[in-house]
Image 1 (cartoon, one colour):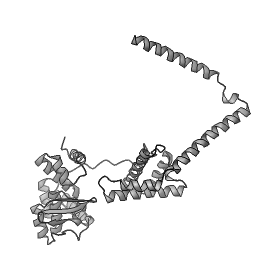
Image 2: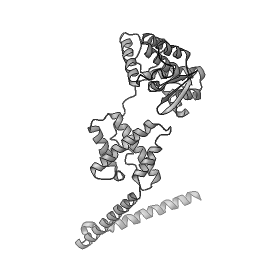
Image 3: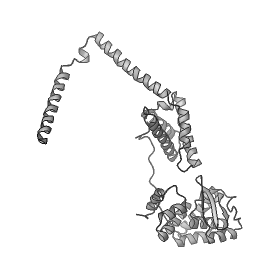
Image 4: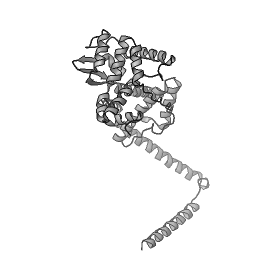
Amino acid sequence: MTAEIIERAKAERDLRVKELAAKYAQAPKLADLDPAMQEKIAQVTAFDEWKGEMKRAVDLERVDYQGELGRFIETASRTGSARTKDLYRRALTRLGEWCERQGFSPLELTPARADNWITVQKAEGRAAASVRLDVAAASAFWTWLERRHAELRNPFRGTRARPPRKAARKLSIPSDVEIRLLEASADPVLRAAIVMMSQGGLRVGALPSLSITGARWTATTKGKEQSGKVPEEAREAIQRAGLSLRSPFKAFTATRLLDRFRYLVRKLHAAGRIAALYSVHDLRHAFAVRLYEATHDVYQVEKALGHANVSVTETYLRSLGLGG
């Protein structure tokens, strides 16, 4: 019975296709119509286009762009990071200013216009990574708008104008022996910083805000306050360097500490004493590896690193060849 129904449906479909083909074959071509009829068709077509444009203009008029922009910025970071919000604000301000110079509202962006904006940014010499961040921010905002306004579509989706991402640097993790060598070769202040990063898991950007009270340390990193237990060796290194436990690195910017670490690494690498040109973040990698290998507890690693959620930590560990 089912086979008969399927065959009947196929036959009816084939018949309908033939009927439509015959109908359109007999339809008059535009060139066959007299001038009056051609003009009438042109008027109808132009009216339909005008009606569509007017409807879109009315729809866009209902969107409070500045209000939506403000609401988006406030919810732009899941972690509440002020830095993330600032990045989004700057990117969308650049986009808005460019649209104003072109003479249209950001709400009137089309895929072609979005590509033009990206192309202009690249032509102005902005770094590829900065352009990618701006495009990501703009695309995130438009995806957010899509969910709130059915008439809007994200013009950045699928763009090929975005600069390609460079191949990621292969992660290199210094061994315990190499970390000891770095500590022994560093000046007292840099040694204290190295010990705090490699044994406490801190980012270099957190060091200027580091404060130690009793057995605990606190610091602000990426807009979030983080805390942990002070490694005894770090406490000793800070005191040996003549630094205050209350705010040991307050007088040093992250950039200054980073430059000193880079100089030391290049010197040791050139002498063949360490295997790679390690970054300060590789010290954090080493901390994560040691902690995970000692505990096999991804939640403990998440807490120690101050990640936003455990999925970030899982991705982080996979990038280090750990955690499955």
